[in-house]
Image (cartoon, rainbow, N blue to C red; front, side, top):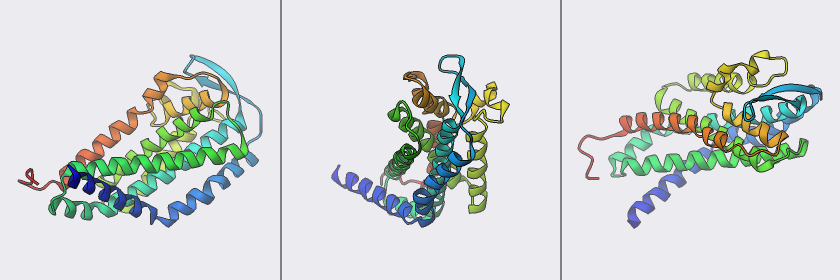
Length: 256
């Protein structure tokens, strides 16, 4: 068992080092997140808006600026995590295949990828939540952190899926940007009546959005929505890992 544990740790360490080399993503995380919060807090006026809070099934009145700060944080972290995981996955495919050819069991490489996605998602979610506190204090910070972490996992899984599926970087960057913008901002009701429509329930961060509203403006802990936040990450990760397994498998390598 020790050799396998050692291989797993080595694979995780390599993946995290590779993701840490993405200097653009690190700069975006450190600088873009607070700048984005600052811009939103400066541009969006404070005032009551109606938000369809599906946790209770009723509309609630929330402050538009505070809601937009939550949305801005979600948008920033989905972009950053999606970029980091997509880039590292795409660039590492050949190396991953060589690992399998050299005797690494596929399940170890897959487990390492899941671990690295989780570590990156949690780190970015915690950092984004901490910076949010400089601008505003939600009623339940832990619930906001959970909502951010779930959204980061969803876009980390999306980055993994696109990284094993697409050949070019430009297509992946474009898809991450467009999906994130549509997903996060269409659920903000400020100047957007579509935010309260039923179709938003199909969006990747729908449950996370409901969850951060619960954390920001209520004392509720919506357990069903916490569970629901894992649906998109699980589905995208399974698809991505299935494609990864198909692309890296070696005929008659089951005995490795």
